[in-house]
Image (cartoon, rainbow, N blue to C red; front, side, top):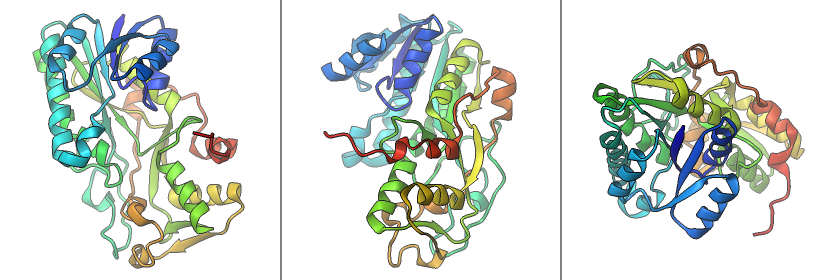
Length: 326
């Protein structure tokens, strides 16, 4: 299958492109710069220079392919236009792909994000206790507000309904929802890396309240395989959950980080999250309770995660290696 991929140089994309090629697919990936083009070529992909703002170019690339996997988003829009601009851009891109693929039965797989399925399970208001909710499932509808910690991913939920709706127009469309933590040896800016950096700065590892709020997670290599399986055999109009760890208590994550850094671990009461401001911009995020199930994804797609789980990956030590010189 000839697959057009956006976001091929990102954290997930850098695992997806080799996974697709290893499975026998031909990949053409979108690149905004010569550096990105060189990276994609090194991964084994053909390169199409362009960007997400060129809707006619996206249509052309999609029409020339046997299927599309859409991972990229326009982070450059956030400083000036915020989430509204990002949402508008995302919607325009997936509708362009849908127009090109309409009536063909070809697959379009887009990235979404996992959030809590009930208000009770979402992040507590600052100063209120954390409430625990049921695990999110593949049958839950798209969440318009999504996880509070992931502004860029939050806007991606806006496109879920549009992507799934393309199934009615002859597109084998589906959404892969990504959990709040996607971990790997190449993760440099995700939630785990931020928690580790914060612990180093503060001299201890903290968690809110009793730390029982849970975070779903997946190794990025296993995440890539969900996108591939959805492309290869996923039915139209479905959502998939790329979740290995259904929900790891934040306290256990903090304790694992503390053990590696040889630092103390401490609880911060919910009503003190902003005073003295230990978590800073992560204050709302750390109260999230976002467990999620992937039972349907495993059964229908035959997905079987094979990489280390979250705590095992932390124990592998790569998150604690000295930073490479820039």
